[in-house]
Image (cartoon, rainbow, N blue to C red; front, side):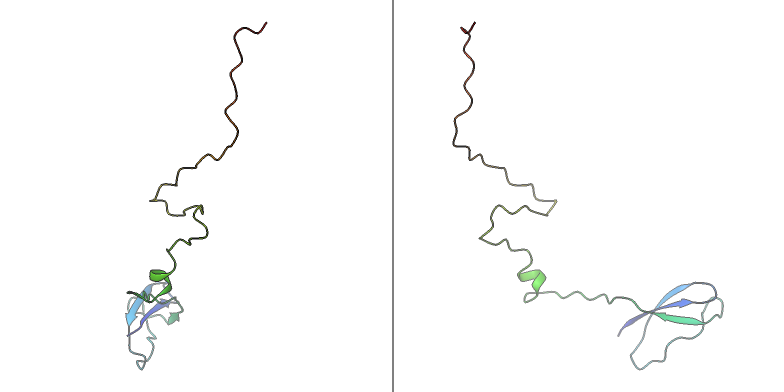
Length: 97
């Protein structure tokens, strides 16, 4: 059964009621007797189990981009590897005048 939200036009009270689709909407506020208006809100649905985008595809890293940065704050970033082909700079000699 769906959960409906109502707001009182007179006192501004918010309330939630679980009602059948066939039940008539509430019309009077239980607190002040004012007129109620049904609010439009997003449904609270969560699909669980396998077969959904979130569980099967959203978290897999692709093999073509292993160096992609991670957006997960719980996981530390991978250490960067040096690919310099040049040798380190030589130290100046002590006998230069």
